[in-house]
Image (cartoon, rainbow, N blue to C red):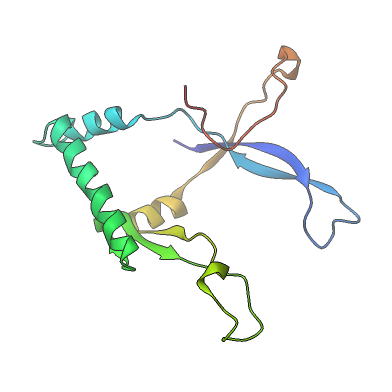
Length: 148
């Protein structure tokens, strides 16, 4: 199955923005949302664990991931990939003038494992069918899933 996308007109931030102030860019169209409970049930159906066992393991993995990231470690999450913290800061003119207050909130960086990198490379794309814009939905569009 192909990843669907739609085209969104946005401000052009490229070097040619004076000649072309707006351009069309691809935006992924998500095909639903898988709640945590459903994911645990799906995993349980394919192994000898119960859904509660899967939830318990994932809860502990989250706890351990948090613990090791706070300690400054890179955490390998099996074939899924690695998690690590990345930090940035505001600059100071001299090393003596630098203080930890200049450090910005850290980001959690995920580096996918080989199977997920392969998935990324083999993903096919398909343009979503045009929807009727007169339906009064405003056509806003967000790349974030809507959770009900």
